Amino acid sequence: MGTRSALKQAFFVREGAAPPRFRAVERIVSLSYGDRGSGNAIFQGDNLPILAELLPAFREKVRCIYIDPPYNNDERYAHYDDTMGHERWLKEITARLELLSQFLREDGSLWVSIDDTEIHYLKVAADRIMGRKNFVATVVWQHRLSRENRKVFSNNHEYLLVYARNARKFGRSRNLLPVPLEIKKRYRNPDDDPRGPWQSVSANVQAGHATPSQFYRIVGPTGRSHDPPNGRCWVYSEPKMHREISKRRVWFGRNGDGVPRLKRFLDGARTGVTPQTLWTAQEAGTTDLAKKHLLDLFPRMRLFDTPKPELLVHRIIQIASDPGDLVLDAYLGSGTTAAVAHKTGRRYIAIENGRHAITHCARRLRRVVEGEKGGISELVGWEGGGGYDFFRLTP
Image 1 (cartoon, rainbow, N blue to C red):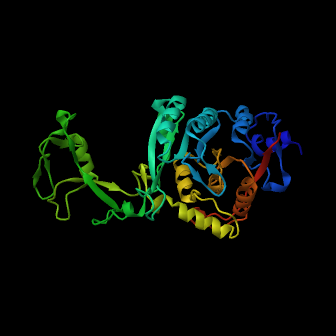
Image 2 (image 1 turned 30 degrees about the vertical axis):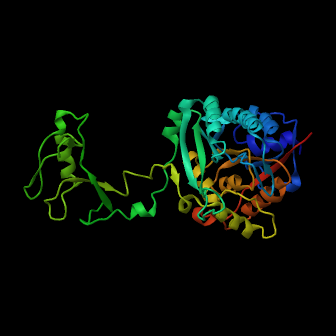
Image 3 (image 1 turned 90 degrees about the horizontal axis):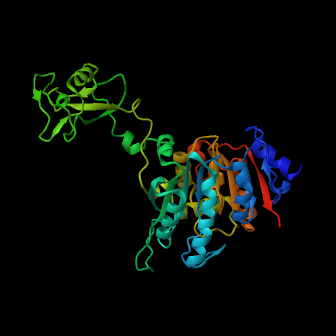
């Protein structure tokens, strides 16, 4: 099967779109694995010409882009030297961001891992390309728990710069995170409400923008009267508050004479929690956790020095996409993004240069298809399946 036919089967059959002519890539049968027509692909080669080849076919079709580019932090790692020099680094990352931005859907988002070395320059470049109004957040990730005593400061965090193609549309479409256990523990059911566990929240708010209908006296079940505190008002108008009381949605304490508070039920009003900008190691994993996972997969493989854990990328993909969406990673590294996308039912385009596109990425994805149990596998109930195609950039 020729390259054009292979790409058509991999990407275009379900979408009904005409396949482009990819003159610069060829499908490598021996490195592809599992189901054909999966919509998943690993590309080996320089990401700039590969992105240029893919853009006509995938313009505005990608829901989530995550990249972990070189940080230009003057470190020498096992698989590459991160010593590019500022001007060259900025020029190269800018060229790639300009291409990547064109792949995003209207509700899509771009996530970039970075550290202190270049974050401020990257922010300025990304503001220009994506538009300052489409900057969403800077996420701080606790990437290590141990203390680095050889440095002036022990640097225990990295960053994620988050941009949207259209911040307003991304804000409406992004997903909430599952309610964590520590929040679920706050919900109780002291009055045996048939609607299930609940927690109480304040029934009054600041009065700065209040209307006259929000100032009144509430009489509780025992006859005790309650006025809003100074400088505050009731959250509802008086008629609505009476309706909420009649529906047993207002709590006056176990004895009925407490200050009124609103009942918020675990099953109903909320389907998740808003993502915060501080991601702890417990929530998103660490570099050491990622190394242990890779060592379990491939005990004799030369590991990456700073691989990203599946928990971190899972959190990104969980917020920024839904099953069936297309995810893109132009700096695949050890293969984490593709592995997480595969396990969570997303389609993916993954690009990596050098030999480790085969030795790390393709081998790891083969194990994923076969049902490997590390990383997020238990969390998402991964049992194996699917497939991917492997393509190589040709001269």
